[in-house]
Image (cartoon, rainbow, N blue to C red; front, side, top):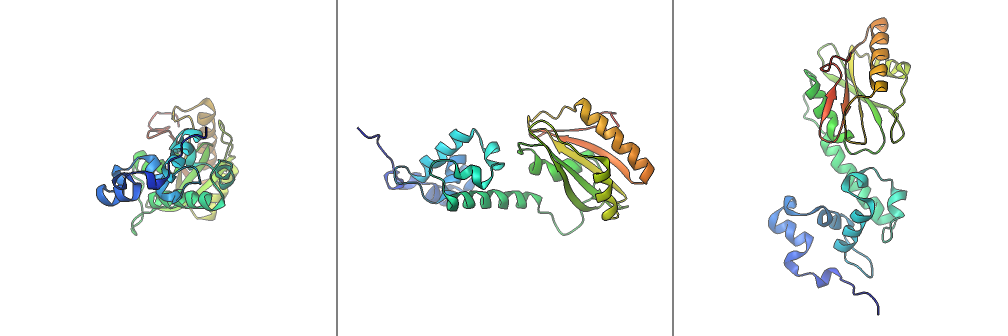
Length: 229
């Protein structure tokens, strides 16, 4: 006996994701319902909602979904190139909206200011990304650059790459940051050692290293505030 299948037409009209969004707003929808709207259609044997639920169950969480490539998405049963592209476009648009700032320059006055710029960009990534915010003499952000993407547990960056980028944009100072995919922002001995090397190089070159932030899942640690630089 074949397993019973449920199509979108089998779901009561008032329980369909689009209708629920129209009636209650996007905030009332579950992750699976929002994902179903991006997918638009399901497969021959399951509705878009059931497909979305299966995707989330298979990948583990929304956090894992954010960092998946189009090829990895297409490896999921029921996801072809069109659906994979739709999902990546939706995810990328959300990330760009997070990065969107008002026209006036963003000023970094404290570690929290820098963390607010970077938190939503870095907290979900499954590899360590080393990022720098380059500032002018008024502490306005003039450039942001990702200088290294590491493995699951390590980010490798050399001071020369950091200062080459700083000099290229005529930066007076910078804040560097990287994420811990584990979600725990506790600095490692390697993080502390790298920070010390960057600070020493900055003193020689004349470009101040203001801070090194470790970004976790919704929280961060400032090595400057911790007295580690």
